[in-house]
Image 1 (spheres, helix red, strand yellow):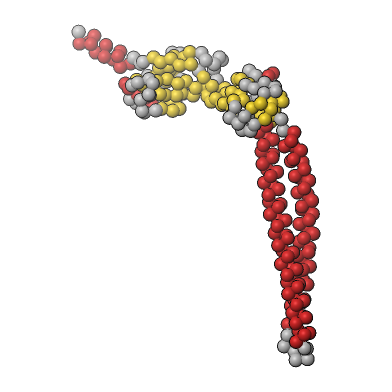
Image 2 (cartoon, helix red, strand yellow; image 1 turned 180 degrees about the vertical axis):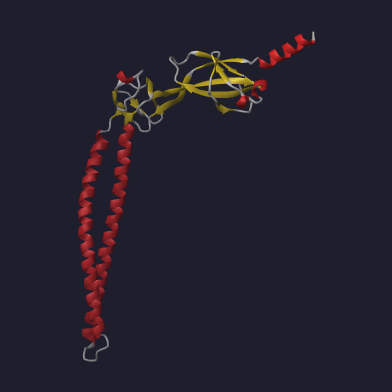
Length: 264
């Protein structure tokens, strides 16, 4: 009798709870519009396929492209103007320096009348003002240059957000807009997934939670080398008294299939 009881206890120890989970993509992405505009292209042929990195949705960017081209052209003119103004600043500085030296030589000479000294002083002041004006003009041009660079970056960013490319290697699950639709910021554009691996989500009992990190994971009755990827040690709000657990596994032959998971 004691032998039977001992065998039953050992058997219960070896038993593991069974859980079932669907093999879902390791990550999913839901892309929304970052800018508003009319949709001019939707490549529906890419839906249900692995992305090759090409544009799948295009929002009208003609006005932005025209403004970008014009702004870049203005920036080129501005660069030329800055170059000329720098030379003007250098020349004004030389003129100011000469005038100051000329005034310093006669400032204390008694052979020069007050009128002659004042004339030299006025020439010095005029040259100084010209130098200050040239420097001020140069600083204003540099400010315009900085503003134009920001505008160019803004336009390039806006255009890139109107030409939606899905990262190469991701699975394009669904496209939402149609050609001719006007989308606003926040409107759904596409759903995609990383199917390079799969994720199993299960909710384990309090009993199985104890020492779970040290247990071997069996999937469909086969021992694996997988480890727990994420473990929530706070009971789930929906699955009361259960603890959410995630396991990342290799890409299955078919996603969304039900798999049996055991911890032993």
